[in-house]
Image: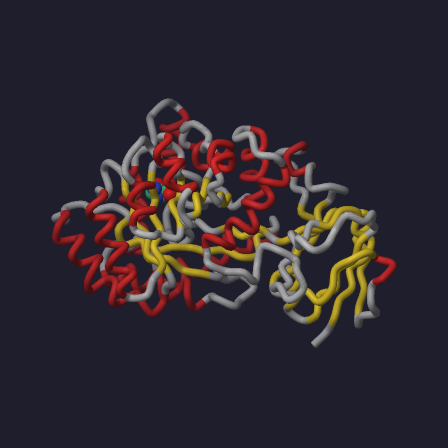
Length: 390
Ligand code: NIG
């Protein structure tokens, strides 16, 4: 066990309701993989090693609760067509499914880990990913297994979700595919995942199918998640809430009933503002949701089709600049909100005992994240107490 004292912190965000108020500079102690102490630098204990943050801001690492990183292939031609005016549809998913099925496992693993490291270098210290580009029992199991095997590695994920119900594979019968997802496919992946997800949207799965997938997951002890209301109004949010899903993700096109349903539930609205930007959808209604009392998370939705970015800093900036959240609200959504969506209380904050997931910004305050969008402000990152290589 080694302890590290970080001093010279100009602004410290811990999300500890019992602390704060007094002026800095602040300090943090990391003991092995845990946060051991936070407070005013003058009261800091001695440690094995020390580092001067030089007047930077310190905050919890991002918790990115929604990515699709087990994939192969490239969809820049589809992106170029979209930029030229073609709308985003879920049809491009099939392009990635074909590439992913034919890719060697080692290639899928290497690419996933490269993207996790890319995210970590930008401050993401806890990251979920999901299957959904296999759509056969063997290919979905391969994706779930390789992602789960990376848990605990510096370039690995923290949680894996099963998204066999992403779209119906080309040429498959919808009813028979749903039977496969809810039966043999779920049985094959269940040991490698902690949640089940379903894309509830025109062109994917309807409300009845989504409810069936969630029930099949719950019967195997898996949390439920729903891709809902991404491309237009629909039943995704209400289905997620009615089924007790832990989250509904996207939640872009919401009626007042949807907002009320989320506000009266424990279902987290996982908002993906970079995806809405990249697919020319309106920004997610974060302000309405927060004002109504719903729990909101921000996530990257990193994937090769609708949103090819791992930058949670961009998501925070968009949440402030486009969605009307304050910097503090956006920060909470990108840390504590993500932790809620993943059902974790050891990440997303710097309370004593938390996992030592910390980032320093090349800025004196977190407000710079929104004030300087697009500028790489991550100065240093620790994940489970381990320094992420720059
Ligand atoms: O979250 N909505 C469905 N799934 C992904 C898109 C994946 C893709 O286009 O490849 C999403 O946007």
